[in-house]
Image 1 (cartoon, rainbow, N blue to C red):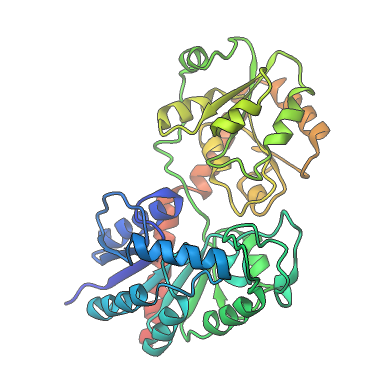
Image 2 (tube, rainbow, N blue to C red; image 1 turned 60 degrees about the vertical axis):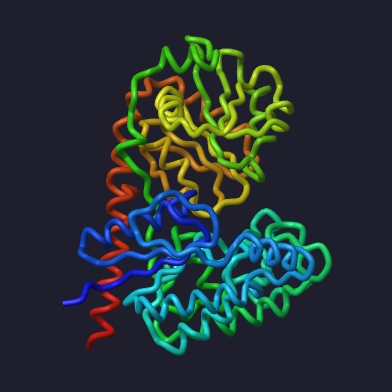
Length: 410
């Protein structure tokens, strides 16, 4: 009896958040005696799945330059995608799982023509909004709602995927609508209820959907007790309450709000920010502790565990896992009502605030810090174990695969 085969397609392999999600799903599939393949565009770490590199650096560069000039993200890489199609034909997967297909490495019309022709079941995890817009991956900061009717005259040309000359948002919208609604057996997987609601207002609204949250490794992100050492390492006063902010990239993640918040809190509060670049570090006032992006996950979990409160000041997001990481380390969360950010918490584990409501944030910080942290820790940890444990979420994907194949066999 032949083993079922899973092929995932993503910009990365076992690298970055989406690449690690694909790797984890592949591991679960293999534990269930499937073969696992991952086709990726660029950047990889060693993987236990069979890897296939789509294209090459030169193709990526040509695609990127063309996109920058002519606003044609996802419409180059013809030869690379044709070779990918030949690879798919050779391995004959039972399920194809798409993740991020943008990123200067894939031609989606070629791929979707083939997927329509074969009728192979396709699962597509939507990690952002690019799939149903004429240009951007995120639109909430600009407050743009043209994607609900028809994109044109894009106000976000300078945003990823940045374009300098043409605005092809109208024709891009038409092409995406044509190809992304063409598959006979497509299931969309938004990573939070907020994104599911956005899809319901887009041209993808009639396609089957099921929400599967992103999860985190609760063995890594766990409650630790290394307060003295981490305070000493980053010069955090021993008696100060800690307000922590973490981002892999602080673009539109509320750095300016933290700077304003500093003047609203007394000196017995320390604000600690992780993930800053050199320019951002130089912009901080002296009474904010800034830390560059760290690959040292032990330091990160120590900081999460030692902090009294985690504040997510994001202005543009889908479902940030930093909220989950803080909760898993026993730290309550205050989060802006941005995208699906609020879905991470409940009444026992944090608070939701409007963007820029810093007076309320400062009051909530003082309220949380007036209580013993132990009052929150167990509830925060339990919230993640019950709903956002990554092994459970990966198994949820596998159950979806089995359901799709069972329905196909009827």
